[in-house]
Image 1 (cartoon, one colour):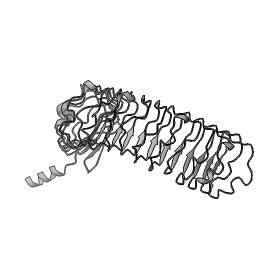
Image 2 (cartoon, one colour):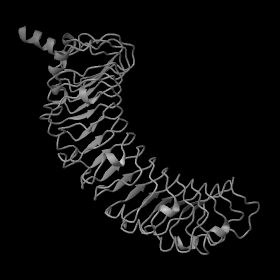
Image 3 (cartoon, helix red, strand yellow):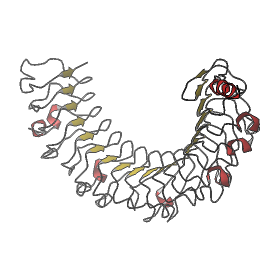
Image 4 (cartoon, one colour):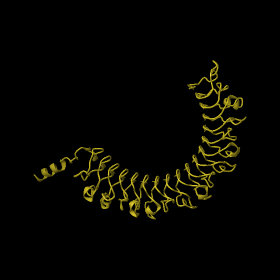
Length: 428
């Protein structure tokens, strides 16, 4: 009889909270059901708990201390405050790997989180302070802290002490003026955009030998705030748009593949400004203050792997000379270009997309045979110029041509006889 009673107890179904769905895989799903309190009597075997998009204001030790097998806890978009979170509760979740607390009203991070944590998302709160054991001693962690109110003073000196495998750290949209110190050497991707960074001292990234992606856009960085030793040579992606740069920064990473310098105040590209960027594949210099006389004709001579170049939104009056023959995409829209000088497109046999919209090009602005030299070109955008006729000698490879907002009043019947692959002709 005792054995039978035990069997009945074992097979007793788990209680599923009202308005939630529960599965045999120990997943409890309660998103967006207007919960104002943490669900009571959850099974201690629960592995995944989804409570996002509710109105929960408080989580106590009593609510969660028995959930020893919990691996994922999603509390995004609730009404949680720091006063409503009892720190000791999270510490007891020995299996917790994924904690999502984005879009709440937290002002202080929990003082202690379990070492099992793999991903912690605290984005879009009002955090002003983090503690040494919030993210310290977490060997597998990735951290998301963007859209908070963090200042330099709110970060402990050894914030990630013994979190030796941290690869991704997102601290964008805060109030940081200094690059955080003592970051883990395993860091691969660092997001610091939309802060108040004014300078980066020499050696700021020296302890990060594995850093490959660095996002510094939308700060207050100037050329004076950086020196020749600012960036690691192994960095392959660097975003510095929307800063206060007046020149191409010195000491750029020699192995960079992507370099974003758009929306600064760069007025000149000197002969040697880009000379060490042998591996660069994508370069964006759009919406700066570049003029044709200040673009050195040999500035691009070492960029033999460059595939994408964007010079849009400057004040160029002439197609730059010495463009890399490796280019696949060239964008120079929204300039003052009225001339494509002889030979500027010669041997650009890999160019597939050429965007020259919103300039001042006329038919006689382009040297004879220029388009025909672009034997791989599939897209040509000449919209918003001063063309009066369809350009002659278009390449056979052309598939799409954009000619809206020109001065074209008539089209000859033979205008596209030489473009058998044409798929789209846009005239208005």
